[in-house]
Image 1 (cartoon, rainbow, N blue to C red):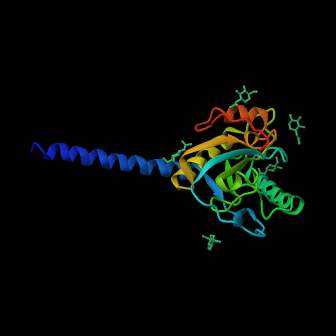
Image 2 (image 1 turned 180 degrees about the vertical axis):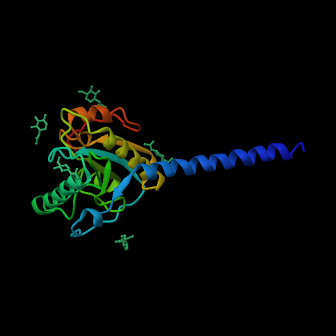
Image 3 (image 1 turned 180 degrees about the horizontal axis):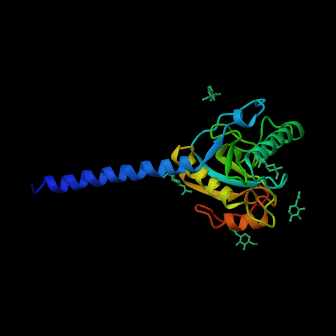
Length: 203
Ligand SMILES: *[C@@H]1O[C@H](CO)[C@@H](O)[C@H](O)[C@H]1NC(C)=O
Ligand SMILES: *[C@@H]1O[C@H](CO)[C@@H](O)[C@H](O)[C@H]1NC(C)=O
Ligand SMILES: *[C@@H]1O[C@H](CO)[C@@H](O)[C@H](O)[C@H]1NC(C)=O
Ligand SMILES: *[C@@H]1O[C@H](CO)[C@@H](O)[C@H](O)[C@H]1NC(C)=O
Ligand SMILES: *[C@@H]1O[C@H](CO)[C@@H](O)[C@H](O)[C@H]1NC(C)=O
């Protein structure tokens, strides 16, 4: 009796903690609707370089152009437009970002977790996941649906061991000479978990 009771309590606590952890993952996954490349009609990449996971950084962007989209079909059209721009005008292998987030709260798979992006320059691409919020967030914030989807996507990356648990979050402007992800949005990003101060300096 003397030893069995504490043992049962211990097992009970361990079981509860497992349940809570499982629920956490389930929450992260169910909060996000990830639209695959096939679903949004992506062109195949010209080439791909595998990512070494988990990565230590997450980098936040805005698209600047086009401006925000508010429903899935319009966002899909914008994502296809961004891919065309990156491949045909910029000459990149594929859409640059690892993921994109629409104003509707839909998440679009770009290069995904496992492929190195073209989003933050050669020093950062192979050690970061780049997430682009579609819209021009110079003077306004992304819709709240987009913000919660973007945050849930980062949590999912940690759960899937694609992003380290103690990752560092930066806005694009902290690693490259750019206004991205827009003044208004950047101010908000500096309040997110894991954000760290850093100023861009020519490397
Ligand atoms: C990249 O990853 C894919 C999918 O896991 C794998 O099939 C391929 O062999 C890898 N390529 C290299 C160069 O490691
Ligand atoms: C999506 O948004 C666009 C632009 O505002 C609009 O033209 C279109 O009708 C909307 N589509 C749906 C299904 O709501
Ligand atoms: C983005 O928003 C800013 C502030 O409203 C505006 O000055 C700028 O022209 C916009 N950019 C585009 C490409 O629309
Ligand atoms: C994150 O954790 C790893 C492993 O414990 C450690 O080596 C690394 O320095 C930590 N990074 C940061 C930014 O704290
Ligand atoms: C970045 O620059 C701002 C404005 O010049 C300054 O206040 C801040 O201390 C700098 N941060 C770092 C980490 O150097």
